[in-house]
Image (tube, rainbow, N blue to C red; front, side, top):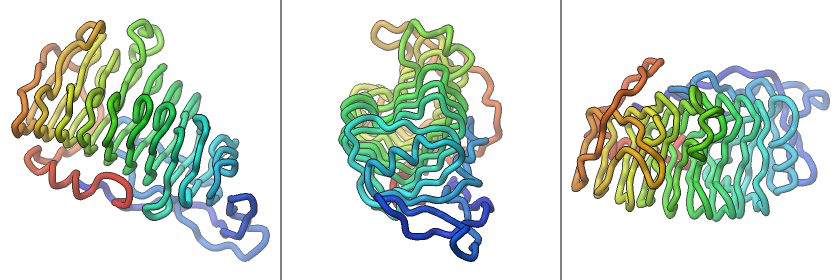
Length: 319
C-alpha cells in the first residue's frame, strides 16, 4: 500500500535569495505567499505523530556550513538540500526539523546525521553516501520519521537507533552496499534506558544485497517489521535479541538463506512472531516466543506483491 500524498497547511512565507549557501524565507520583505509543508505524505506506525518542521520557515542550503547551522538551530525549520553537502563529521539535527532533498539531487556525503536529544524530526528524499560513521544515528530522540532515502557505503551502520529512542518510523528507504545496516539498541548492558522504549516500525524498505542487521534488535517490544523486500541478504535479515519482541509480517524474502533468527553473537535471544511472509529461494527463518500487540491500525500489502511495490516505490525520487 503506497502512502498518501496529502500535505499539511503551513504558515505563509516567501522564499527570497540568501547568502552563504542558504536561501531563507523572509515574509517581511515582500507580500506573503501561501506555502505548504515540505514533507510528502504522512507517517504510519510508531512515528505517526511526527510533523517535523511544519509551521517553521523554509530554507534551502547548498553547502556544509549552511546545512550544519540550519539543522542544529532552535525552533521549527524546514530545510531543502540542494545538491551535495560534504560533511567531515556527523551533523547534529535538533528538534522540530524537516530535512528533504530537492528532486533527486539532495545528498549527504562523507559523514552523516546525528539526531540527538531531539523530538519531532523528518528526514526524506536524501542519499546518504560514504559516511565515515553512520548514515544516520538516532539517540535519546522521539517522534522521528525516516522516509524515501538511499543509504550506501557507510563505514558503520546505515541507520542506527539507540539509547532510549522511541516512536520512530523507517519507511520506503533503499539500502545497498552496506554491511551493518540497521541497528536497534546498541548494547546488551543498556536495558535500564531501553526497556519499554525502542518501539520502531520498519515498512516498505528495500534491503538490497546488504549483509546483516535488517534490523538487529535489542529490548524493543513491540518492533514491527512488515512489507519489506529482502534481496540477496548475505548474513541474515532480522535478529531479535535481549528479550526484544519483533513482529516479522508480510515481507518478501528472496535469495536470503537466513531471513530471521533469535539471538546474535553474544546477545541472548528475544522473541519473533512471523506471519504471512513470502519466501523465494530462501530459508524459512527461526521464530519463537511472544510479542506485545501492535498498538496502531495498519493494512499490510500481500507479501507476494511486496517486491514489485517496494522496488517501484522505495528510495530517492519516489515521493
